[in-house]
Length: 102
Image (cartoon, rainbow, N blue to C red):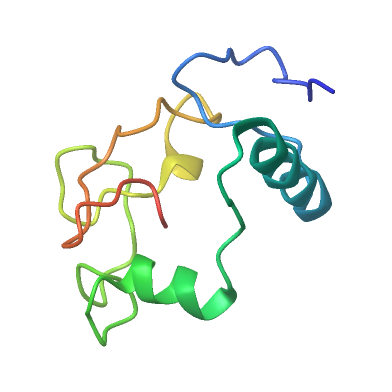
């Protein structure tokens, strides 16, 4: 199975057009293929990772995200032109060093 990339490209771009069931099937396949155990994060685990120890609306504070790759709150690829996904790591990492969690 190879989901459509809507003509936006693959490579360093995040996969699109996959469901939760698709992602779950992928980690099951990956586990079988590698002999390692992979799973999706729980909602609580994802929120912990995304917040990176903060108690604000976002890991950078309460400001809404913007389309500015250099800004601390630059995490809003939806408002960037052209309106499509951006390469992974286009915005600043959170305090845990994780990219693209918002």
